Length: 361
Ligand code: F0G
Image (tube, rainbow, N blue to C red; front, top):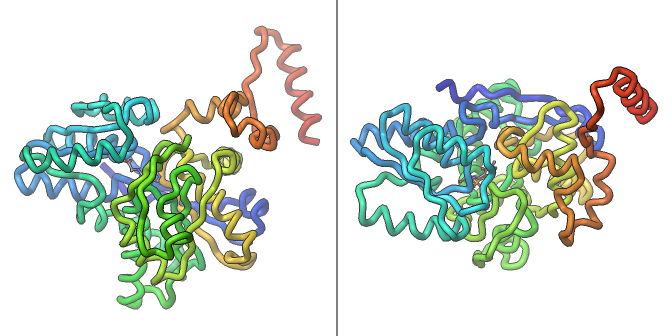
């Protein structure tokens, strides 16, 4: 469907705000189903087809399921989607419905969906398309290879990715190491992984347990794509951190919302889970791990329109209303652009324009 070859954008305003010279976004949300899942899914779904499977299945926080449903439909296979009820965005749910998946909203979280799916594939001839599928990982390497090609095979200093189930960090890390071994690049970029504070099992694994164990948790974040408490690929991701010298960071709900609006204000936009990369970069910059003259690439994993509800609520100022984040969210007010309702009256529109002009000057 034309997956891959996604754009690499300069984020000029964000770069200034963070204090780095060269900040790029590799926008994987510009794939056919609007998330980074497509490059791995086209490969893994093709492999299901080649093996003669009629059914494919996944547990998902919404993007894997949207992608799988599309590629299954293209390959004339049936798809079964297990998603946590009430915890994925409407945009993603509507994709899986339109692409014809059998969509089951289970009364549990993502980790509960994974448990049921793992049982199911033992009993039914259904091909598993979660990111533990090796073809998914191989296909997702594409983002890193394209990135290096776009940068003229000049490795950036840092690549920053969101961490959920940790398949993507594993895939990008694998691609970097392979490119280095093949001498396509002369040094390894540091790959850093950012989690939401309320869905931070990998952060805790590294910071509290020195990588010795991963303690599963009940995850809960407004960045629903990464609401994952028991990531499948944590050992691979740990290896990537060690080999590339990257770090793991965690960011708060308010920091995620602010970073998302900042990326949006650069004219790019992404979904909340992708914005953890910018929020994490701010912390890595503040700690001195990222230096002003270094080149940084954020991997934006999903399109802004995946979760318009989040965006509208943020700009209207009610995203955090009545929650413990309400007070810290006060400082994001300057980023909010609530729509203004007016009569169909020219002077009223001119007055609004003039007020806005004053605000900008
Ligand atoms: N960003 C977005 C937009 C995602 O949808 C996901 C994961 C991630 C980041 C994290 O990537 O899991 O490879 O570490 N989404 C999966 C899904 C879990 O089901 O759509 P990861």
